[in-house]
Length: 189
Image 1 (cartoon, rainbow, N blue to C red):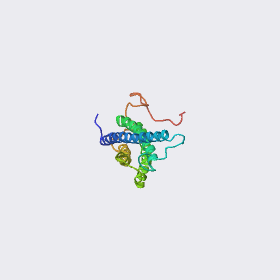
Image 2 (cartoon, rainbow, N blue to C red; image 1 turned 60 degrees about the vertical axis):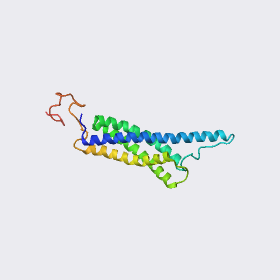
Image 3 (cartoon, one colour; image 1 turned 120 degrees about the horizontal axis):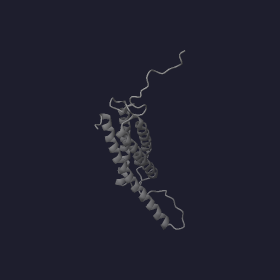
Image 4 (spheres, rainbow, N blue to C red; image 1 turned 90 degrees about the horizontal axis):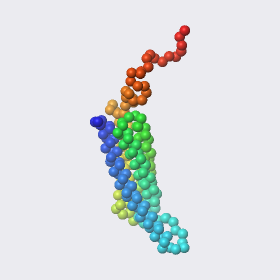
């Protein structure tokens, strides 16, 4: 089956977003694992004192919030990619609503992480290594890529080659069983 122009662009952006969300989840998982190991070492070393995770071993004051939001954005992004893959394979208006709404929710959550990444870059304190800087850059790029994906879904909806409203034989009455005549509004005497 040949893809139309809107469908091809959406499929390409879907694949690109999938790769970027996987990289983001890997980097954010690494940073979170490092923070948990660091807090566990502090709790073991300081016997008798109750400590909480107030400082991450990497980053600055915005890092804990950034990591939580980018992990959530990554999971929501993968869920939207699943809905988007179903929509691209079917390319019907029935699957369009699920694809656009899940992509919009993932994009909004990615924008929250984008804001924390910008704040983390602005603060400039703490130890920000290459991986954390790469995670910040990926979250900023991913916010734009997710927006492009949403726009491609909307443009595919409006394009001539976009999802069909109804195809013959899809839902409704079976072929050859069409209703004869128009609707009646009353009875005749």
